[in-house]
Length: 189
Image 1: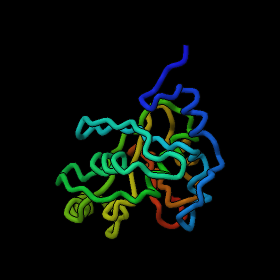
Image 2: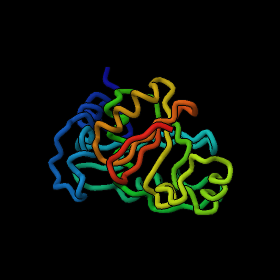
Image 3: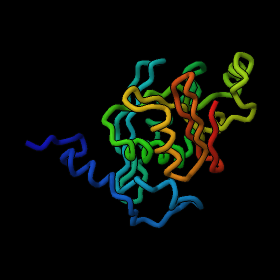
Image 4: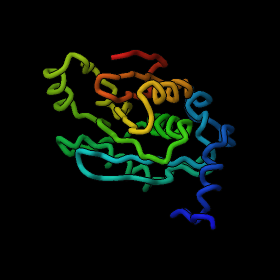
């Protein structure tokens, strides 16, 4: 029997729609063709935060339109948990994360280690680690550090790089991948 999701669609229909590689809507960002690869006509994001214990699993885009309330929830979820500050997360970053997750073909949600970082939090982290950028895209809501237990750092990074939409950093020692919507580049930390 087909499992019905919260959207009223069968799981197979939802995944099939999301797996589509062609997007009917006109791209709105200059790098749209790259980061929409794997996006489909329905976009869904699944994450949990070990810091706050919160989980998010939602469709945030349907047929060319972002769902305002869903994006608002994502912004709150990706807040700086240390200061409880929220910023509007760049939609391109959310799209890269969702498309990468889709390409990995997993049901497991991302574990989000870091989304938005306030300047105060970023400065504190810079004092503790030389791997934190002074002008980090995390402070603009344009980056996320993510982990999956069922996929390696290399597999996650390859999926993110396949989107050809931003920066991808592999941090094998800390077991996470950095994804951002900045210039297309990759590195290992």
